[in-house]
Length: 274
Image (cartoon, rainbow, N blue to C red; front, top):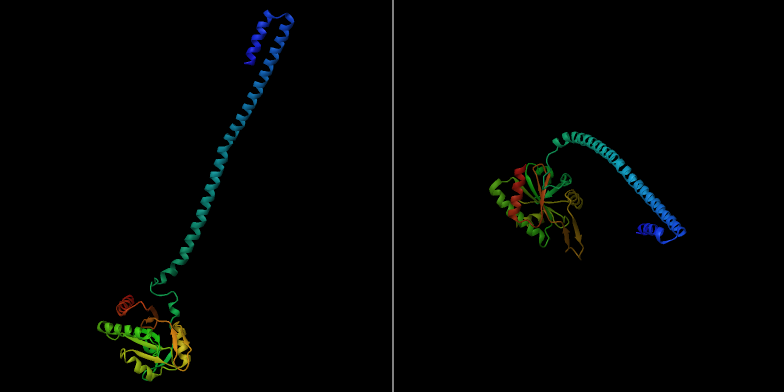
């Protein structure tokens, strides 16, 4: 707009003003026009320079991206090859070992081989009994004591009922055993009188304090004497029935939640898997 006004003024000045003023106005118009031309040239040059710089970056970007892709593909291929190599050789090493290893049994703890052990005790008739005498039979093993007020009588009754059910199905393949945790009071005669109230086939075992401690440790049985005055004391102990296979290997245990029927079912299922 300023450029147009200056041009109009210069043209009209020739007729409206004198020669001197017209010349001055004309020179001013040339100066404005020259400045405008320089400003346009400077702006155009810098716009071109910025666009050219951007184009150069865009031209270089595909090369950089291509190099990054090649690098990542190469790295991924290397990792895949190395991982596959180690995976293949690890399976190759584990294959023969896993083929020889039998499938794990869901009802047997991972440390079942450490439950049990050898023992020498005395039964209710005064005869020496060892763990070897029980080999060849499935054994139901329970730890308690004859002065127990509640848990032991309940578990022994469940055991006696289960024996009656099993005797009708598998004859005398099951050997029920009761091991006392109170050897000071539970003599052979005491065991005889106590166990006869439940089932005649239950084998009662007692021994010295050290003998009982050893067998309890082998079967991981917790027991603790609760001190009272005189000889009237209680024994706190774990309360579960152990099922041992014909080699006296630990199979599983049954807690207080089992009744005689579920105990029988658990025993029969374990026998079928052997």
